[in-house]
Length: 150
Image (cartoon, rainbow, N blue to C red):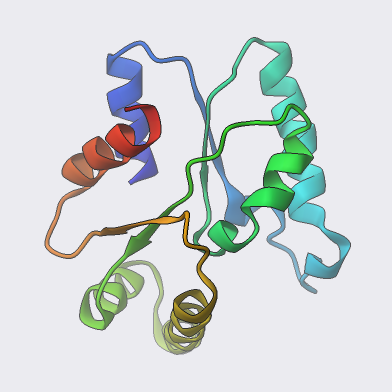
């Protein structure tokens, strides 16, 4: 969805950056307790900001639970529009199966199921939920753009 949103914003000449949150702290052993995602976001965003960027598309499913901490890491009091993209179990599993295989698929399905439970129980009220079931990335990106930029 992020690439479709990026393509749409670029076509509209909307200056923006895209950061995949999973890449900010993807390591073994997992460095979450060290707040590495926030530290790396601060460093990367500082570089974008120095070049004049003021809009960020940040992708990471669980980040909707940590939007405040991530916004604080950016250091410039950003306006945050948190959007959780949802999918039913069969859609989620089909998408996972496109990128994961064998034991890795089973692990990711378990992780996805656990994340869905946490999100269901803990999602802040100000987070927009957007279903992606049966929809292509271009249409979802248009709806995200509408929620984000109006």
